[in-house]
Length: 361
Ligand SMILES: NC(=O)c1ccc[n+]([C@@H]2O[C@H](COP(=O)([O-])OP(=O)(O)OC[C@H]3O[C@@H](n4cnc5c(N)ncnc54)[C@H](O)[C@@H]3O)[C@@H](O)[C@H]2O)c1
Ligand SMILES: O=C(O)C[C@H](O)C(=O)O
Image (cartoon, rainbow, N blue to C red):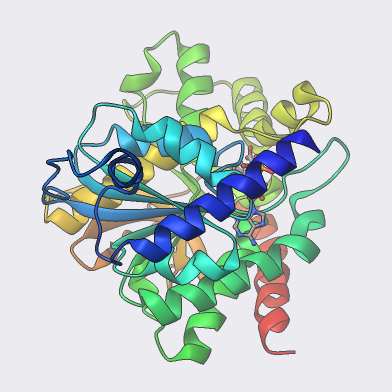
């Protein structure tokens, strides 16, 4: 209760201050100070760079992700939106002496201000799993959250690149696409489901088995982001290597169940947050470098795709100024991977349909 009272008071204070600030104001934390202490602030506003919003910024992923994005030199403005606790998170992060200017936004009435002008929107809003749950068990709550946030994006920053983290990603990305289609703003190149954690885990686990530095390992992970839809291509690991059948079974199972391993270890206190924030920050950085025009940026992501007969599929994509500029072919699969692909497609197809029907019911 004490905490809620404090948050409510902080929200009121922020709302009052916001009503005094011009929409283009650049340093709310500093301007809050200058409003209180007089006009002794010489801040000139944000340096050149990209404007990034995190929706769900006060959560288990959102907070460390906010910290990592505040450290990213490509980010000039960082908007932190959530339905709770953003005043505190924003005040805290804003004290870091890095370049990005941080602004906090609390609750639905501030969603539009949070989104206006953004180049990249990252969505980790929604509930996480508890032991015994599948990611699909989150659908009933998270589908509506993602719909509302994407309606805001369609209205306020229709050209932004959107990174969807909220589970079940296999369905929330199709939900986002349908919302954007309805709004007339859909650009499949700009909507990306974040599956980087699967690659991060695969690189780590393969590095362990092979005795390699995980930073030197690159495992393509295709399909989607749940159970059997997570399909590591161990035949395409870079650097080239070979595995015994036992190693293939062990690694495939561990990569597919990496999320559950964390959910069980956290024993009811949520799912992966820290490794996920790392993965999301890595992926967001790749998207920003693409927007900047850097060449040769390739990441795995769950996107609208023609690489299989399914409308969405995770595979290697090349990122550029307009988002997904090329979807790379899957490459040669061995028999184990071909069998895995068929299983993955069956489950993915149902998850995609579920997401599409949620918007078009
Ligand atoms: N894609 C992936 O690889 C991956 C990895 C880990 C977790 N996840 C998913 O990310 C989501 C978030 O996980 P978490 O551990 O951060 O959960 P969390 O509960 O710690 O944080 C979620 C945050 O979302 C906020 N939120 C809820 N409704 C909102 C709304 N309408 N608008 C804005 N914010 C809202 C909550 O207030 C909370 O702060 C979950 O769905 C989880 O399954 C995905
Ligand atoms: O497993 C989860 O529920 C969270 C996330 O999708 C993960 O892979 O860690």
